[in-house]
Structure formats: C-alpha cells, structure tokens
Image 1 (cartoon, one colour):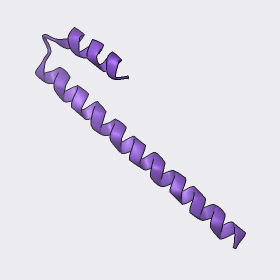
Image 2 (cartoon, one colour):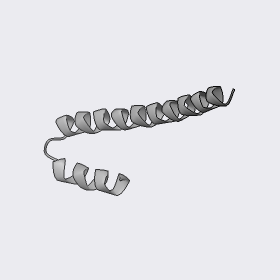
Image 3 (cartoon, helix red, strand yellow):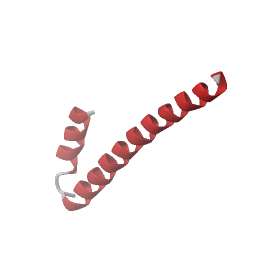
Length: 53
C-alpha cells in the first residue's frame, strides 16, 4: 500500500511538470511568431519579453 501511494505522488508531480512545460512551449511559439511578424521591432519585443520574465 505504501508503494502505491508513492507512485500516485510521483504521477501527480509529473502531471504538474507537463502542464508547466506546455505553457512554456506555447509562450515560446507565440514569441517566435511575433518575432517573425515584427522583425523591425525585434529590440522592442526582446525588452518586452525581458519584462514578462
């Protein structure tokens, strides 16, 4: 029984990590798209991303 509880805890942690990774991937995709769209304003975008981080 104790072993099963440990496995459940590990699964929960993995799910949380997966959610965080998905969010990060979405942000990166948006950043890449924005950069492609606004090549002229790359410096402005970079500063904005720095503020977001």
